[in-house]
View (cartoon, helix red, strand yellow):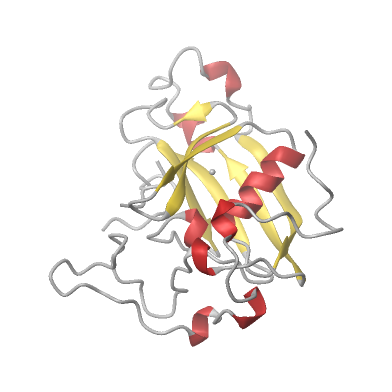
Amino acid sequence: MEHTPEPDTPDATEEPPNATPEQTPAPTASQQPRPSEQPEMAINPETGKDQYLTDPVPEGKPLPVEPQDVTIGTTAYSCTISISCATILDNLDLCDPEKKELVPEDGWILEPMTVTFYEGESVFNVLQRTCKQQKIHMEFEDTPMYNSAYIEGIHNLYEFDVGELSGWMYSVNDWFPNYGCSRYQLQDGDIVEWVYTCDYGADVGRPVT
């Protein structure tokens, strides 16, 4: 849901990953403006949104960075990532019967762990690599309208498996961005949490808008 409008992988401590279609060569990541240096979002006065239908980002929060404008650098940083579906434990009556056995007793699919990422990488890049390394199922689709990957399922738990308001969302440093995970460029020390919601974010701390 994510609610905006996810062979062995090389050791992340060695070399940065090869470029993917999300990492179209452009100026190096070190030349990319940091969130604090970026210009204001280009908002269409008629719609009140940017070209990818994103509402204005709250003051003080990082602006989205378009994947096609980024080249991954070689400077390594670290962040914390976790994946939880604990909300399903309180909504088992709504859960697809065939999926109940997939829900861990404590709700953790991936307990918080520190991982390495490279300058310019996005939340999506880190989720994709971490899931491969930890052998966690993850399925996504590219959504050109929002210029981001959309996380459909993790650990074989998909959107709508626990009701019509259920699906995956992410937060960074306790903020739920209003744009896709491919557009959120990570900073050193960020805390990324992927959570399954059964109530369009209300049960995981996402403010109601």
